[in-house]
Image 1 (spheres, helix red, strand yellow):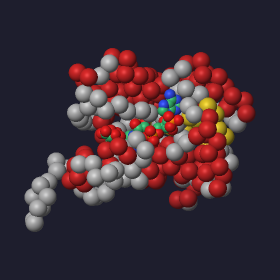
Image 2 (image 1 turned 90 degrees about the horizontal axis):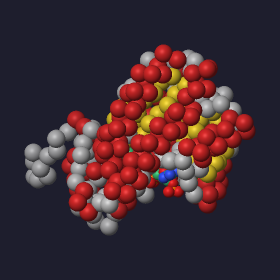
Image 3 (image 1 turned 120 degrees about the vertical axis):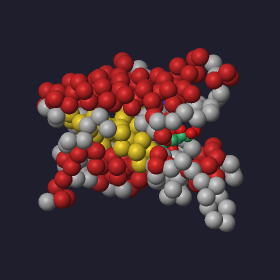
Image 4 (image 1 turned 45 degrees about the vertical axis):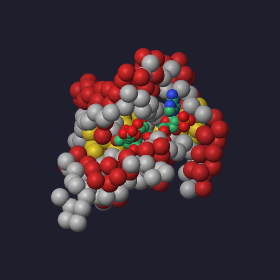
Amino acid sequence: MINELFDLSGKVALVTGGTHGIGMAVGMVLGKAGAKICVNDIDEAKLESAKAEYAAAGIDAYTLVFNVTSEEEVDAGISKIEAEVGEIDILVNNAGIIKRVPILDMPVGEFKQVIDVDLIAPFIVGKRVAPNMIKKRAGKIINMCSMMSQYGRRSVSAYASAKGGLKLLTANMCCEWAKYNIQVNGIGPGYIATAQTAPIREGGHPFNDLVMTRTPANRWGEPEDIGNAALFLASKAAEFVNGHVLYVDGGILANFGYVKGENDV
Ligand code: NAP
Ligand code: GCO
């Protein structure tokens, strides 16, 4: 039955940075598919409000505050989940930050901070979660990549370096863990309407025009567009999909762009 392919009942899913934006959309979709959702964030207050939002959607989310860049906090957090909820079947490495600063103006410490959250943290959390998946000979890991896993762009050198690395960390996790029936894939969202893109989307920012001409679908993506893709990768339907980055971008990667005018060229 088709529905059984996407039924996550009995599965435990951890979404890092799941209190809003793309992470919350992923948590909502996986929760509605039956998974027990564990939501992480670095901010306790956001976890509390998120718990209420999940509850309003009929999802009893287990919430846990830890900094994904801290090996100690990640180990303690995952151990708590394993003790109180169960071993993790689905990991979504979603937590991320961005700093839009030209290379010449960016302190090395800020570059390292972005690399820590966007690349090293998925390594830390994946490395902590994988051993039980290996024991069970089953698991799903989804790393939240980006258009910047494929492109550079002025002012986002740290972010693009991290997301480019995350694409190949995804490949390497696949190479080492696929034989244990663990599927490790990335999702590459296009430009999605969240708090992270608000500074370049709102208030008539000219970047909005660029997104419109670079996105054949002529719209910003919604977090739910990413949640739906995560359901596919977390499901039985994707058991032979591995090491892949699924771009959910409205066609950006297929499009060089066009000149707006009477007859768009
Ligand atoms: P967002 O609104 O900025 O949310 C990011 C989440 O990560 C927040 O909940 C944040 O918590 C959490 N986080 C940050 N640092 C953390 C840490 N050290 N430990 C634990 N949690 C931490 O971003 P988004 O737009 O939803 O994006 C989510 C993911 O998709 C990110 O990896 C982003 O790079 C990626 N992405 C976004 C887009 C887009 O267009 N929006 C496109 C491609 C890829 P706090 O809010 O408490 O700081
Ligand atoms: C930016 C945006 C992008 C998106 C996303 C695109 O400043 O270019 O924030 O990086 O967040 O990663 O896929």
